[in-house]
Length: 525
Ligand code: NAD
Image (cartoon, rainbow, N blue to C red; front, side, top):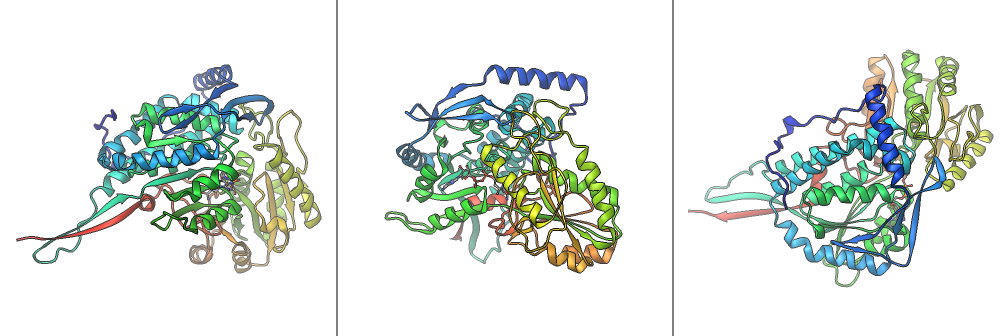
């Protein structure tokens, strides 16, 4: 446990990590060098990592470059159900040791991870470009957010170790301490393969829990690189395991194990609900109720009011809908537009969408890269077909040329609130546009969803803005700006209803989900 403890970890010193400007030739040159380095490492094998032990098994999975699926990014040994059970048991055995490490030391390790990733930023960016199909700027936003999570949670952990004093009864010393929970299972999605994986893991570790990480099968190499950073930062080899494998097979074993204390999940609604149900069962030998923190899907809407700045609104809708190919839980998939400006806004949306370039994400000239895999491509194209029956295709609607999983950004207008395109999460570059009679109708439409993650309103009418602040039922509401790009510390992130368990990643109370409070009253005098 060698992390330096001299880093100032007060909240006032927290700053969001600045983004690299790739339009500067020297930075572009460094990124090209990083891509060349990463490409020289493609196809390498990665063993399982179970509590300090590297294991090979008789099953492997390969992650592919979605821009060029013939290119294998990493070959990963898959964990068996037995590996999953052993990982939980090893984490349980080590938990008392790790829980006893002072919070300040664990926080210093988290800050150290930030330093390591900062030092290797171009390299991490390049892995995200190659394995997740992120463009350079999207990869950079992911890596910068990961750094922010480390720095922010390190500081929040220090605060948690010294909570506000309680009321002191006469003749007593009254205090409350926050204790870690135990073994946590961390299950991230592929779409923020570093930031979300890291955020959930660091939050659990810094508060004194041991974890078993089951990364997405689409992005296991990014997870392996993160595990290297954890070890380099001084996190003890037995404090975590990294178990690549099928979500359905080993996921169920990890979630239902009696020694598992909590599950920190980010992913789709269906998998989140399945995990929640499974975790609610109490197997023999389990002496607690498992805690589930689940961040799930979205069907996010941007409302554009009659008096909105149309240029800004169109730019915000297009950026929110098509950044990272619409594969963000916060992506705008519904534009709900006042009828007075419907046609004019649609024209601007179309013009901006038609200007977007689509192609391999390692080419900086492309604004959009591929969608994540062949299955996602088929599912998105199927929705586009459905959408053309439910509404009017304005632009897009087809694949883009190239070996990768490329889909043109697609806008479908005149979509009804009952339509599948209006209600179901597509998770791709497809925007449904719907006409509203007035602002109240727009709000009603926006809230007509089982999800409640992000939303935005473009309006210059103060009364309407105030109404949206009160009545737009989403976890993250944005006014006169796009609905993607939440910043750690400034925009605590997480949604309502089927978007999750109402937690707020990157917010001041996030770490409370990884601890339990113990109240101690001692008679004095
Ligand atoms: P997914 O639900 O398919 O998979 C998420 C993770 O769950 C993966 O690691 C997968 O292997 C694992 N998994 C699958 N079956 C499992 C099981 N039975 N037991 C345990 N684990 C299992 O989601 P995805 O395709 O990776 O990610 C996209 C989804 O994530 C979208 O719905 C998106 O909205 C959501 N998301 C939400 C947020 C948020 O903060 N709310 C952020 C990012 C992504």
